[in-house]
Image 1 (cartoon, one colour):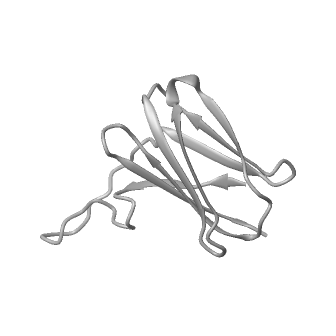
Image 2: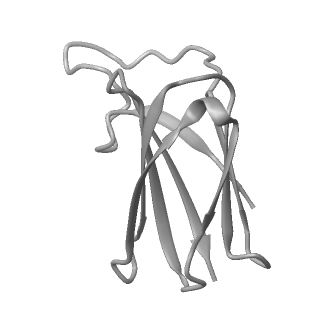
Length: 107
């Protein structure tokens, strides 16, 4: 399962303001994530060195929460997740405050 990751402020806001429309431009998301159900593993890849990245993974159905910090210059990071069904949200917070958000479901 590939997880679609988008930018924003972590609160569902795309970063626009109330004074006008939100304009979107093509952007290359520097993070890729995929969930492998057979391994109960979330595999996260960073496209370049982003420094220390805070990662929060929450099962919004049951409330399980995982929080960690990783050094993003190491490329790919596997995260073992409990094989618990639910709707998950993953937040990646970069050192500059930029937040990327992804969602996925475990059945």
